[in-house]
Image (tube, rainbow, N blue to C red; front, side, top):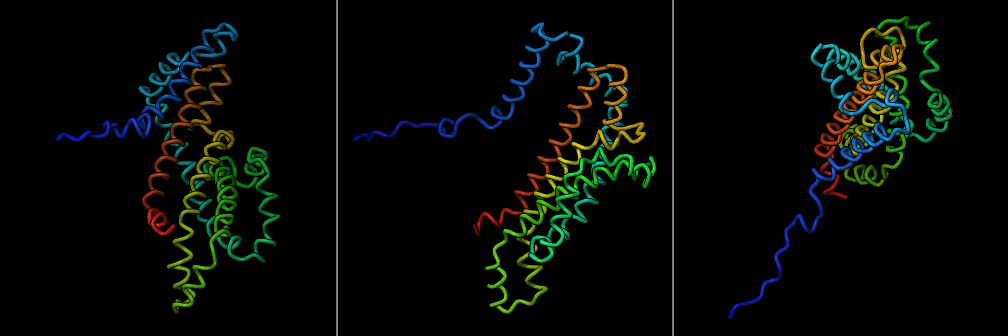
Length: 266
């Protein structure tokens, strides 16, 4: 006797649209809205270049080799600023998060300097660092340090002390507690601080390249604005966003690999 089997439904039907579709659709919507604004007549065509005009300018700059050079220079500055900022932010954030007395003493200073816009510091940066590469890296360093230290100490402060007490009960020394308990638990917060710092550093890139920069995406945008070349401005802005997005996706992938063990114990 034949038995009735339940209707076969695909896994895709149960979980919804494919991930690729969910990823692509927002970008398609943005491009369509862009075209709608450009052709609506509400804004002068000279003020809103069309997506295909921006794409054509992007290709022209790419084939000339200029855009590659600008992207590389900006990426290098952001990387140096973020790397040096995180190297300092991690130990400082750890001290603030783990030791309440240190946090109460230094926290007001951190919040004071964090509130200062990096662009306001450009005159002082020029005075103290000149107009060389160190000055252009100083702004991303400043922004990434204060963004990273806040994320770091807020995350470390939330680590449950029960892990430390259990380790000490099992006879772990102070060094073993730090290496095998505290440091692994702090890794997700370090990666989060790095992601936040990267975003902030890219956001301050144009400000850092105000300092007599001849190369870089910020310099490309500034030079284009002087000649009202809006398509080049759009190219520079889109490149900054794309590079920042690629870096963030790479960090998210690294985070999933490095902290996968936490999902098994949570």
